[in-house]
Length: 123
Image 1 (cartoon, rainbow, N blue to C red):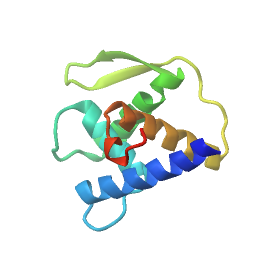
Image 2 (image 1 turned 45 degrees about the vertical axis):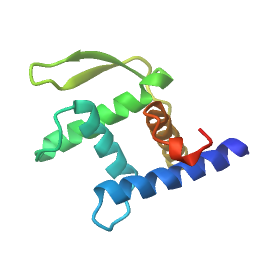
Image 3 (image 1 turned 90 degrees about the horizontal axis):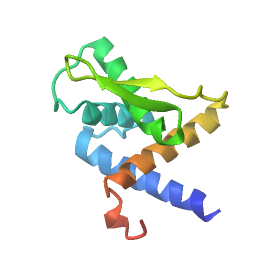
């Protein structure tokens, strides 16, 4: 039970902090956070992205987030510097609520790897 409470506390903290940093008043949702992770992983800084590039950024983020779970593995960077992943294990069929929990947990793990929760004092 402690882990769930910890997950909720960290998620609330993360959403609030990222919203303050990157959103103009509207609270970031999970898709917005995944998009930010994609931009970070691409490593080309803030720039305008085309619609198909935005979809690809979210794909990069999802692959990166689920890589520690054994679903994806980094493969290579293409000539434009975009990372590519290969599927290692197919994702299981999850209910929407289960998908949300998995992605939130993966996002929190990602930010923990960046020491993003140091100010929480319980990392």
